[in-house]
Structures are given as C-alpha cells and as structure tokens.
Image (cartoon, rainbow, N blue to C red; front, top):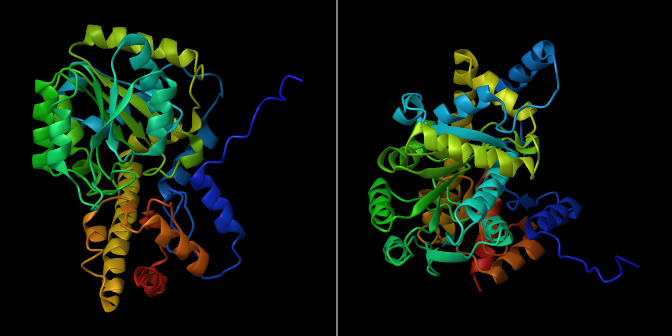
Length: 398
C-alpha cells in the first residue's frame, strides 16, 4: 500500500521529556525541560490582564470572519510600537510594518520562505548553540545554514570568536541574532557587544534577523528592546520576529509577528506584498483571538499597565530563582562553579551539566532537563531550591 514504506520519526526530545515527567510518580520531581513560565504553584497562569481583555472580546466581538493576510491592523500597530517604541522614527515614516503570524515560530517560518523566495542565494548564520527549531526551519526552506560561535565548551560567552566569524561571513548573508534571553544558553550580549556586532553587520553588509521571543523577561520591557531599536535606528533594513507566547501567556493561541524595517515606505509596501503572498500559501490568514487580546491590552492604558506589572512580576520571579539556586548551591561548595546561572537572563540556563549528569539527575532524582544541560529556570519550585541543589551536588561528586 501507499504508506508501507513510511518510517517513524523520533519524537521531539523536549516533548518526550514532558511525557516522561508526567508519568513519573515521584512527588519530589522537577520539570525543568519544557520552555513555559510557571508560577509558585507550578502552573502556567493566564495573566489577569489577558482574562479581562478576553471578557471584553466575548462581550463585544461581533464576528469570527477571516482577518487579512497581514492580520489584525490594530495588532500590527501595537506590536510595532511595543518592539520599536511608540516614538520610533521608522513608524512615523511608515518604514516598519508587522505581519501577524501563528506564533514566533510562524514568524520564523515566514522569514525563511521570504529569504528563500526573495533573496535567493543568501545563506543564514545561526549562533552555536541556538534553538534547535531554528536549524530545521531554515534548512527545510532550502537555505544554506551556517554557524557562528556563541558559547564555548567552557560554558562561557565568547564574543571575540563570534565577531571573528561574523567578519568572515559572505556579504549579503543573513545573520540571526537573539535580542535577549538567549535560547538555550541564557547568555546575553552587553550593549558594548551589540555595538561591535552592529559595526560588523554594517561593514559586511549583512541582513540582521533578530529573534525577539522574550521581551520583558530579561531586564524589562523597554530594556530588552534596546538592541532591536539600535539596529532599527542605524540600519536601512532589518527583520524582527516577535512572539506573544511568553510575555502575554498566549502559548496555545499562537500569536506572533514578522516585523520588516525598510529604507522607505514604498519598499516596505513591496516587501509586505511578498509576505502576504507567501503567508497565503502557508496558513492563508492568521488566527485572530490572541492578536485581538494583545491589541485590546496594549490599546488600553490601564490594561497595558496591569499587563506590564504582571510581566515585571514574572521577570523578577525568574531572577530570584536564579540567585536563589546559586545561594542554595553554596553549602555544597558549588557557588562559584554555577555563578553563571545568576548572570544569565530569561527562562533558560546552560547549566554546564554534562549529558551523563543530566541522565543521573533524571534517573536518581526525578529532575528533568534537556540532555545538553539546558534548564528552564522558570520551572523551579522556589520552596524546594535546597532539594534541587542537593540533587545537583550529588551528580557533581563523580
């Protein structure tokens, strides 16, 4: 029959971790694998600002008809302002436009097809390491995928090696940069580092594609946008992928955007026409609900402030978990060894644990994290930091 020769693809390792964690009967287990924010009760909550916005939509929304190829214009306006700043000259000059996508992943996929169709022959450069789906999305689109160093085998950010490689990239290629809260390492560039990267991007005539999935989870909503706004201000052309999954808690509503910055309004219209054409053949039109929620929140000053406060509370909790884990490791003589956890930003941490140690953590202590040693810090139970520290210390004794 037709399907007889079709084999089975191995399951996604992170989703496999979710299943293994769910089946583990140990009440002392830790889920540090899947990349979602969790509160003190171990739940991924719906922000109150989102609940209030949804109620408004339930009461006032009159139709569920399709939205256009670029999505909800109100969403496009507010996401542009959130990312680029309400006072952005690009917005005033109509040089920036957002195309709504099914999540940040949809924005990445749209960017991949756009590069493949409209910028033929351009390769894309990813950090080593990077989010694994970056690798497959761009390879599937037929792009040549290459890598620049980012975090070395010593688990340290290597800016000099990064810059040296960027200086060798063929002119005109695309370089994907993480705006903040680097996934999977948690190591972010300093402002001075970003200026040096900008100089190389400009001199090598590279097209930056900035993945901005964690706005508000690093140093704050405005602070996290610093590098994005610098590049938008200093360069004539830029691609930005934005996600509302984490900071709005809209994981399953698939809400994101691909923002294009062009040299003038006319060229932006040309590029956006291509994006709408490509999107038509990917998902036709994007889902509405999450974008309507975001537009409602960011379009209302009181709701926006409530949301910003909720994001800040999530950010602070993650930062406290980082410092708390480092402190809990001190009695075991491991504070210095794991001090980088307190320096990293966002939900993820490259802990420096080996695959063998990660395996022991899972088998002997029911601590679940990715084999690379990447841990979702936001999944830690603050009341059990000492227990987690004991488990880490145990596997580090060998």
